[in-house]
Length: 247
Image (cartoon, rainbow, N blue to C red; front, side, top):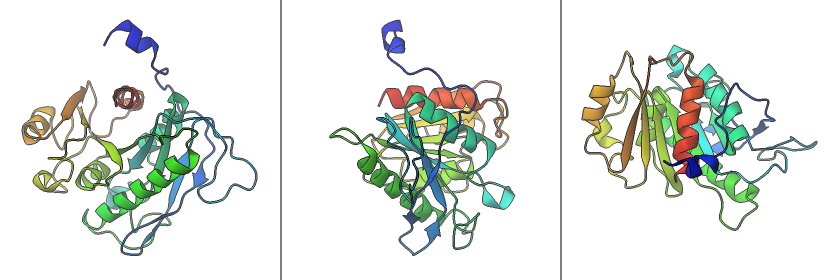
């Protein structure tokens, strides 16, 4: 990448920024209502904004759907890394949508070990597609990308939607869902796997071997990070901004 290309990119996101989150409607094909909210670049959260509302904001480069870690081990859509991305990415022009898997927070249903949760991811993708169409100020709505961490990485890599532009797997263990059955594996759309250097559940070498045959897949190592990525949220956000900028 040359300096001219870098100069056209938005600044890398730093510490989390204040955003006006607004509720988003997301319902699964098996009738589960999911708790979800979104943030749009430049959103000011006007008075009277209801579900799928939000401020007039500005044009978004993309909408990133954030899927959270394992709900049986404390994971939810307010997890620190998910929260950082939800707040920081809009400062770089990327709208965000986060949601709780079934049985978590105010979402209905019950935990299903990563199986029915794939329907949750699809419902979140659909909500993001609607949001992109409703909020776009251009003829072509911004692309929708999936960005899932840990459990959310496996589940979202297994889920697909015709309007999804790309997948990002953050410290995906590649074992909660069989990698061979993941919808993203053979799909020609781009994928970015962010693998912490010291991940306790799936090393970079193992992740590379497992995904060797995946189509259009880039694997980047987060230097110094472990599975929980404490202190590495900004590095993750920077990789996402760069990847989205190349779509």
